[in-house]
Image (tube, rainbow, N blue to C red):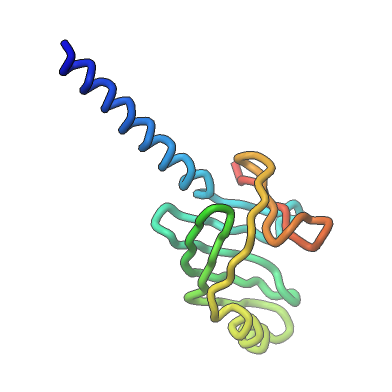
Amino acid sequence: MAAVTRFLSLLVVVCTALVIGCSSGNHLIGTWVNESGKFDQTLREDGTLTVHYESQRSQVTVNGTYTYSGNQLTTTAKTIDVTGGPDPVGTKALITRQQVKPSTATLEWQDNDHFSIGGSPDTGGIALHRKK
């Protein structure tokens, strides 16, 4: 009986650790949009991301990778695609120069479905909510 009790206690500890570990990392997984709908990002479990936004009347798609630790999100662009607008080639060159290095931003969570990145919206940050 003592062996069974010990096994069950160990099982509870392992399951709790798995739940805590998975839930803390996985709450960022999903698609996040801003209120205007001109920015969205999808963060996948495998560490890849896709970002869509509008810049200078062009549609921009960035594919890359991310890491998340504490409240710090670090993204690295791998490919950038720009369509439309008056100068898609120039816009792509400008965006590529800005996004070739890893970029780290602080996330401020309001709840599991809302956070701001780069500060609060009042200070120039972007408020995002989970797309349902």
